[in-house]
Length: 461
Ligand code: 4AD
Ligand code: MG
Image 1 (cartoon, rainbow, N blue to C red):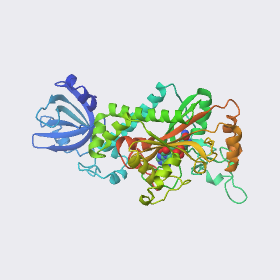
Image 2 (image 1 turned 180 degrees about the horizontal axis):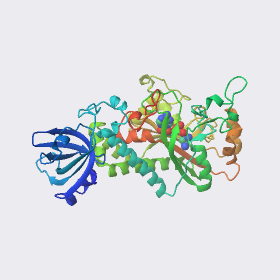
Image 3 (image 1 turned 120 degrees about the vertical axis):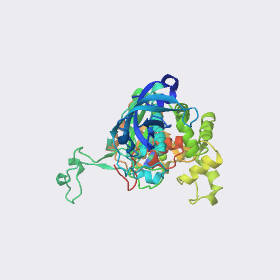
Image 4 (image 1 turned 45 degrees about the vertical axis):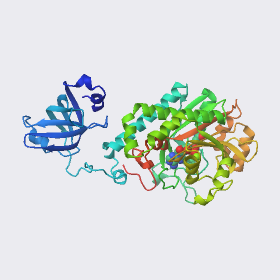
């Protein structure tokens, strides 16, 4: 079998030759003596037209196939200069690999994304979702390529963990299924100390703490894996299970961190523009009209860099535009983030040095004693796409902060230890992979860039 992509990309090689393709029927119509099938195999946008005729002994069988059926076609690839498509296959043989029931939910008309979410097993057969998931795959590859080319070591951090990296308590608990035998305390609550892991365990919200330990051995590392958050945010940008890329670099500060993040985002964008031009044109035409221009601008200009304090001054002057009014000390909401990146800077912007109260315990305290060396990267259309920081590398300062926040020292002993044995300046960040794919494609709902989204009230398949 040859892919339809291959036929389009190397058409000279295949024209007037015998080829065999396999795919799913997009549309089918016949007259008495011949018929047309449009078939798609997921490798390319352009569907391929097949012409079949009544000299084939299974003409009748072919003609009664429904949309969605899987077929294998052998025939000659013939140029069709008059038609919209550059070529078609004049079939010698069409075999039906799998029939499709007449109630196939995807018909030729455009379906809404909302409807397609209800059939997440079939939506990858539509043009939009084929483009989304090809771009998602390419972006993942680009990320590995970016870090590997720079000598970063890919570390597989655990998904089951005993600590809460972000300290936000938004964790899914992990326990054994055998609830009948779950050890109980006297008051009836579960006694996790006797559970499988001998302690209370959860699904990780971030691989950062583990990643930091490897950065203190390899200098430059990255993680790329699923993370889980039980935050009850029913928004277009939050999922309960999402993928995160977390580089961590030793002997590096916040500036180095931003330089890395900027280079990475530009690399991913350039790679996808280069490798998926048809998909990107499709998004630009059908999903988000300004997409290509915006992404090209991002690649060709520097990201803005502004402190939280400066950002708040700008936002305060525009408080009449916001639902939530801004003042120093408050966390920035999506509306504020988007205002900064879309209205003020009109490009990606790094906001640094947030008040320590609204950021995680591990961030390095700045000399002012009030802010930490945090950085969020905000992009148009989305808001926060990256969150990171320089880490507190001083044992006593970190310990004091953990005590202030009432963190259980026992759970973070390994993390504190790192500050005892050859601690270095170090920094890192987390890129939300789905938000990155949204940014690349212009898709506006996180549910539409996750193959099988897990969001509030939604865990189908
Ligand atoms: O800002 P966050 O919470 O940072 C961390 O987890 C750090 N430990 C990262 C690090 O420094 N190594 O999350 C990082 C990014 C966010 O900027 C966002 O893009 C994404 O992860 N993210 C989510 N994406 C989808 N659904 C959610 N519920 C998300 N929560 C965070
Ligand atoms: Mg964040």
